[in-house]
Length: 299
Image (cartoon, rainbow, N blue to C red):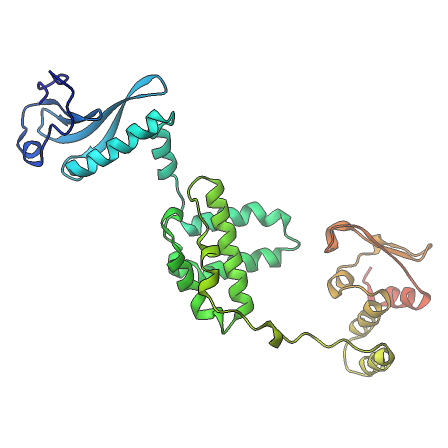
């Protein structure tokens, strides 16, 4: 036992304290247990655990909590862990601060979303990314800390939609995994539960996925004639023809600006920021295309 208010006398033994002695101590002072662990009794009678360690060459006192909340066994376990960290050259105080900084999944997802937003092709994709997590992941484990989420949590979010909405489920799984990879990079996790459940989910039968049928070249002119004869607006009719003549995506045509056209040289250059490949794309324009563009694209 230590003298009240001082260091222990005699040999440095371990586990000097007992649960009964912790409850019975009343005199103010420090009472040693071992591994630098002390029970500090204040003049008011309150008791708390303190560990004295040498961390990176400096003596530090670490508070381990009130003795009314943290039992003797838990205090010893925490003290032993801190001692091991200090001996390996790490700082238990820094490790604790890092642990206390762990975000919830919802807060982390928003952080990752903000980081990736400038890299996505359009705002719509960014909204889809966060909205799917909000709908399917947040209700299950959005409020849980990243370091406490396990594969069962992820499975609970994906199972209800895995077979009924397979494409959405795969995207949600991939997005959860992205957040978890960010958590690993922060030092808050060592595993990715979104990857760990891959074998627990049934395989999707992708043979049943139906893609839009391609229109045979020989029928293109008939299709354009049918559109021309429809009650669609003139700009819609010409825009469709313009897409066919330039072999572009609808978004590239709908977002076209006159500043992108060089009518003198009959060229249309789509800037990199509007291209999926993120490279400028130059398209030669036929006479019919020039007429369609002059009519369909607003000035």
